[in-house]
Image (cartoon, rainbow, N blue to C red; front, top):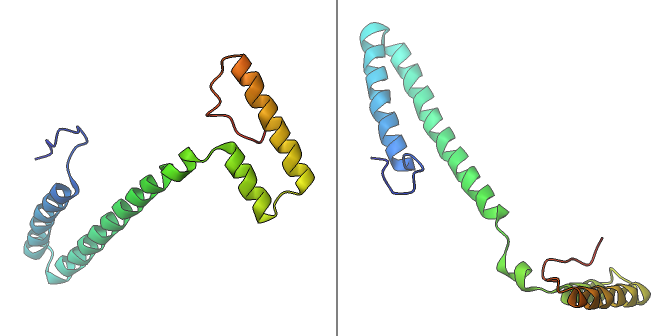
Length: 124
């Protein structure tokens, strides 16, 4: 159990299996020592906690997926981004021309200085 090679601990299935074994022990103890009403209440809490753990794991997985950068954004160059903004009407023709000129000048200066320009953006 828990040795999947990633060093990340137990899998979600193993956690649920352990949780259910422990829950059975607690419910049986509640039946023996406290009575059926307490056993039903504990069972309801344990079932609610299972759904809560499932919800939180789904939420964490979806937020991890959202943090990853899409491949399309990595391949779009600044000139294409500038053209898209101009086509969408976000920039006037004068703004487009000045930003394009600034981008060309920045690329030329970077090439003369032997600087990689892949990580540069249009905005300061």
